[in-house]
Length: 198
Image 1 (tube, one colour):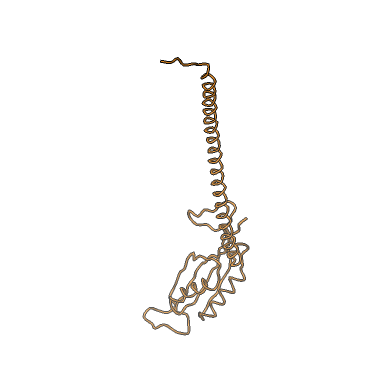
Image 2 (cartoon, helix red, strand yellow):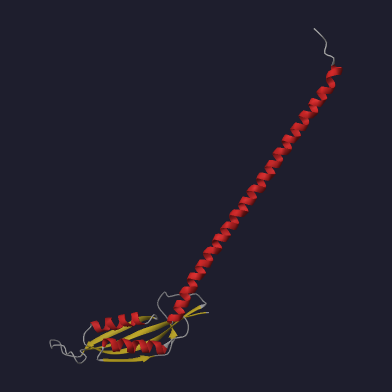
């Protein structure tokens, strides 16, 4: 058995050890670099997703604003939002009467007041008002009342509600209905609604 001459091997062994240490250091440095890059990548992806979500929300909000702005402009044009349009309501009522040819129709438009209903709540920046209108109608038959309300609903885009109606017969029961004179007298209270959005 021959003896190992370490004098000749020491230098290659030292070089091997240094190479192993350098390789290990490079592996550790590469792993740390990869981890740092992965962390930065994940952070960038998270920021990109958050930005995309903010962008999507912004687009959705802009679409909603446009949609509600169009609705608001329609409501404003119709008179539902803004100042009360008393003349427009009266003209619509007169136009409906010309179309239906009711025997008699009188009205009394009262001052505007707050709109009150049980459990009706609005936000503090919105004020809902109503203008009561008393109607006294001479009708040939009961359907005239529904026809009047329907013509009003179709002819004007303003919102109105019917508070109450009472109907009394002008002619005795059993007697045939007159086609020229009112057979029924009706008194109704309707409310024209307006919204003041501050």
